[in-house]
Image 1 (cartoon, one colour):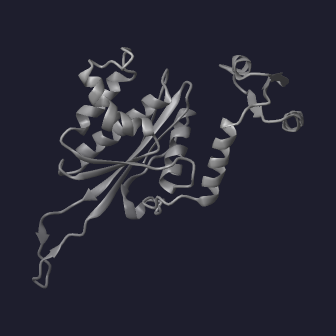
Image 2: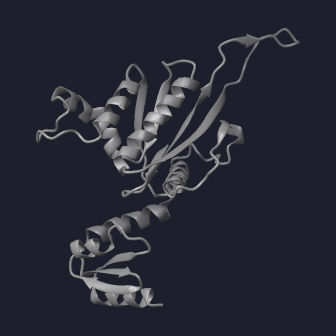
Image 3: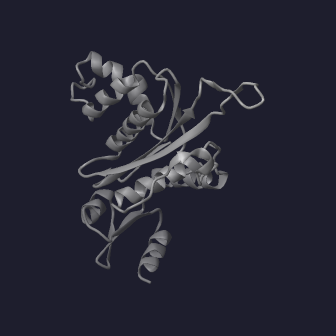
Amino acid sequence: MLAVSGQLLPAGWQGRAFGEETASHAREPLDGKKKEKKDSIYIQELGGVEENTTNNRMEITAVIEALKVLQSKVSSLKASIIIYTDSNYLINGITKWVFGWQKNGWQTKDKKEVLNRDLWEKLFELTQEKDIEWKYVGGHIGISGNERTDYIATVFSDQKVLDLFEGDFKDYPLQSLFDISEDLEKSAVKKSSSSRSKAKAYSYLSQVGGEIEIHKNWTDCEKRVKGKSGVKFKKALNAEEEKEIIEEWSK
């Protein structure tokens, strides 16, 4: 599972590498019958933070770091790898767009320099001669592994300290890691939020230093809050909702 946090600076990234530590040899027990050593699942949580970066760069960084760990831990580089991510940008970039970028000298169709080229080149190199399956999982819909990655990425983006797990899966606190079924209630909330974000705004409200202002467009609202700490901003869909937001912020 991979996740990042933060669109403005700083941003944190998080990845989790896991794989089977296989044993090809057989051991000789006292009864003389050979038994294969049982495989174990190795888990290593990863995380970090960078200044002057973006969500997209952190998405790519997370998988680069996870693949580096897998290369050092997994005995066979021919092993199958499954990467779960909530980033379509990451999946499309490495499975589709990268080939066109390379062909066009790392330029887009509009003849512009490809963003994050340095990371895409690193990721492309790491994925060569590997059997990788890229799987999309929805973010913020209750998938336990994705929820954990979001939490770790947020902690790192806040530049706080967090103990990351490394060891056998049987000792891992999140035993539901491989359950990628979604929470229907959280999924419904996300869909509702998505519909709201697309709805036409009646107004935008901002609160800076305790002062509330009403804006008729997002540009003015963004200009007031951007780069400032301890601010609030919200979209109102009608006059009644605008009034409710003001009352809530005035408490």
